[in-house]
Every structure is written in structure tokens, then in C-alpha cells.
Amino acid sequence: KAAFAGNHYGTMRRSNDEALDGSYMSIKILTPDGVPLLRDYTGNDKVLSFFVHSPPSDVLRRRMEERGDSEDNIAKRLSMDNRWEKAARSSDIPYLFIRNDGSLEETMRIIKQYLE
Image (cartoon, rainbow, N blue to C red; front, side, top):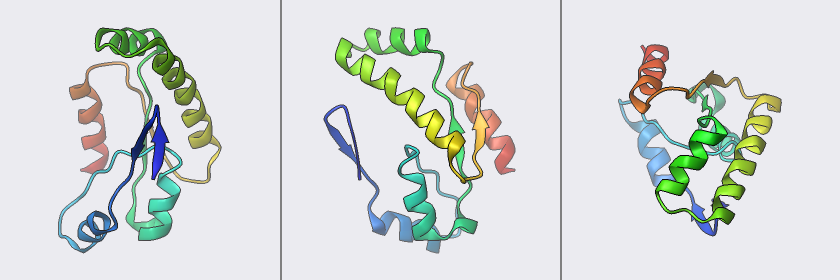
């Protein structure tokens, strides 16, 4: 379980077990502190880890302002993004790093290419 901006996030064990036992691919959105936990739980050979960069800081700030986030939450998120990237780059996890400079559709197209 991870905490961010006063909220707690996590994945149920049952969800992970169902994904492992299923005949389908499962995609989970995790912060870098959650990826090692999932890899340890499932076995490293069963997890393909992508690190999708946040959009540039000015774009992220504008998006958060437009949806009404507080200045405090915006500052926390921008700081957290820097820490997440440093943690991912310094870890021993073989991330596939994906730029996030375009639309969501473009980012998903790039990820899909890796999965095919």
C-alpha cells in the first residue's frame, strides 16, 4: 500500500493472483516503490516493467490546475515525480522507459508495440 497526497493506494492480493493464474495480460499502474513488491510477489520473470515519464512539469502543472488541485498537491506531485524517476533509474529493475510527450493514445501505442 502506498500513500500520496493524503490518499492510500494498493492492489488486492486476489487481483494479483487472478492475473497470474489467468490466460490474459494484466496491466497495473504502480509507483516505483510498488514495483519491487509486485516483482517479489509474482516472480521477476512474470513482470514487464514500464516507467512512463510524467509530462513536462509545466504541462503537468497546467493539467492539475485545470482540474482544481491545490497548490500544495501540485508541489507534492512535481516533487514526487522527480523522486520516482530517480528511484526507477537507480533501481535494478529492468524498466522500459517511455516518454510521455504526446497524447495518452500515443503513449499507449508505444507501450502496445513493446507488448506485441
